Image (tube, rainbow, N blue to C red; front, side, top):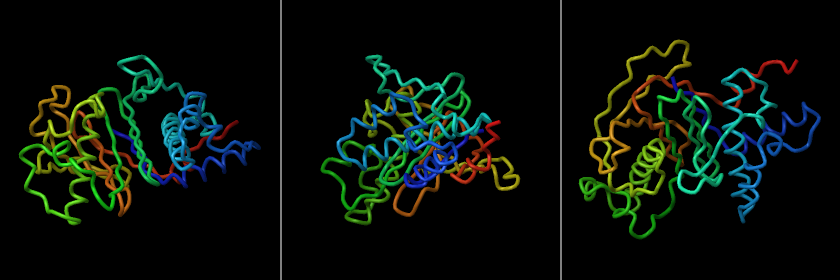
Amino acid sequence: MIDVLAASVDDVHALADRLAHVERGAAGARALVDAGDLAAADAKVRPEDARRTLAGRAALRLLLAARAGRPLSSAAGVAIDRACSRCGAQHGQPSVAGLSVSTSTSGDHVLIAVGEREAVVGVDVEVVPDELWAGFDDYVLHPHERGGLPAGDAGISPRIRIWAEKEAVLKAAGLGLRDAPARLRISDVEVPGGWPTGAGVLDPGAWRPVAATEVREAAGTWVTAIEVAADAWGVLAAAAPQPIRRWTIGDLVDARPSAA
């Protein structure tokens, strides 16, 4: 099972401020992250980018703490390694011992996934823009996808969906955008999950496999949509279809154990 948290940047900061008040602190989200997270946020030039980065870093820690049954106030102590696979500096994808984790932020949205190591997860959330940059189709779309999408404004949202799907796959593969998304294609055929939803906690999802790829590490990966908001696409990628446990900010609070 994969745990997924979809939240707004504002809601993450609101929860952090609430925790700071309960703990008689004043640092908000800054008290829920470590020095590396603070450095990453403080390196952003625009205040809104720093705020979004801090929310994404804090949200991952909060989900990990809640999933493990730890107090949310202990989130800063969760061990997360971000060593870059190429240079070793702490600016790479997050890694947690025994788990597979992935994070993404865009606009006011935060999307987090945590699964067992063999789940090999990747997530991406993308706000739909008013226009696309020149060369988008050549960089993102597989040759078999070009020409099959609407032109003009009507084609922006479906293209962003494809972008989000492929970036999630490439993050699951541990590559990020070091490989061009156009080198892979995802099937249009959905495979419904076969798991019960229980009391609404588990989502069986509707998964689609990578149908063709020149990226060896992406072969065999599957994707499913994650509902985020009307203005954005959210996607989860994993090594195989499996049930999803979705979390909200409220769920994190409800799962919080006593600090005693």
